[in-house]
Image (tube, rainbow, N blue to C red; front, side):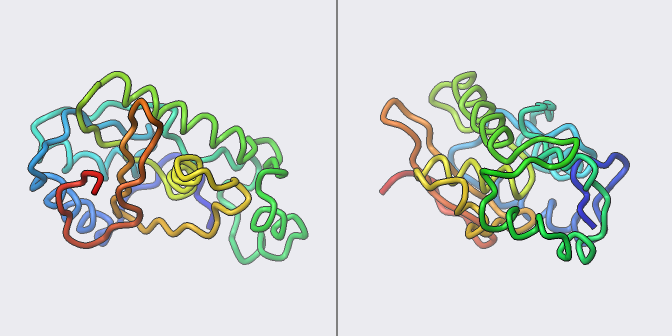
Length: 189
């Protein structure tokens, strides 16, 4: 199923275990994040909750971190969507595709990169955690490394993985992508 922005979707037991594990990993960082933001969807707030608890902060919802609006495709079975002729465009030319009744990948990338920059600017010199969804995270990574959006499907973002981007005066620096193991201090080498 393509969950998108469907309401009422909660973490399964495995998801709660992954959220607890990533909270432990983030909580063990030497430089503690000062804020936790999450997409307003239930599953991201449930992922963010143990992270915020480990850091002693509250989770703040941010609509800029929302999943792509898949419009009428929301909730559809992936096996059915794969059969649509538009699916090839979603995979090979996402910058040229708008979901029926939803947003384009380009609009989603602009929204989420603006949110990342805004959250970074709100906490100058500090580390913040932003809990989002795979496609928005991949879109932010693509923008940060200067890769065209049409190649963002090549980036892997696993559930509860850590992607770290340093925003500075010289532009973004990608420190980690899809980290599911032990975290070291996330600083440029």
